[in-house]
Image 1 (cartoon, one colour):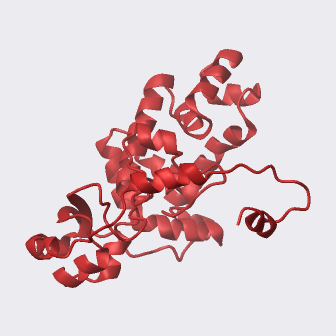
Image 2 (cartoon, rainbow, N blue to C red):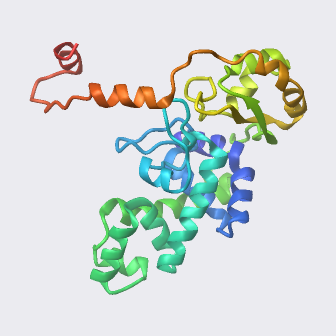
Length: 275
């Protein structure tokens, strides 16, 4: 039942993601990597703080140009995150010369896989598995990917039949004045709000960031001209007095405390302690 949901959700993005992988000369089948990472849930967050369909940690996301602040987290953007993942995987393949090791490094980190290659004296993933020089999760990671790929290529054979879903719409990047609420864009350009929100999951507050005078929104292609022609009207309805991301980052730093959890403590107990 769970994997059925993965296949169905993934089908919405499959063509888009495979096209991006093609553009970056990365195997199309790596589409299934995001499936085992997140099940194609844009809002997915792991216990280690990895975010989005490709589960980028903050530092790797930043390295590949994904903006992350109080207002925006492009790790949740299926388009920009897929482009970043394609570049990252291509870089890892250039480093290790193997797609299996590139995937292993995507999971465990390049340094860890380099140490495993050195200890195992091999660049053959299966030999490294036999020698147990890779972490257990990574030893299972590539087989899990292969299983998802084999099932995903021929789902009916494995009993998965109800997996069709509405395809991801054609979208265009349209510049709007900033900061502005998405509901204002929808109202002024007469575009359904839900359609704008669904293709901009990386906007965390439903408002464009105040650090920029203009901001590129993803807009369904059928509505793009409407939004473009509304630019002057939108410029008169930008948000005034909104705080920048730097303000919230400073507040977060000044208020940060560390607490060692003791046996028997609950989250509500800790919350009361620190008010």
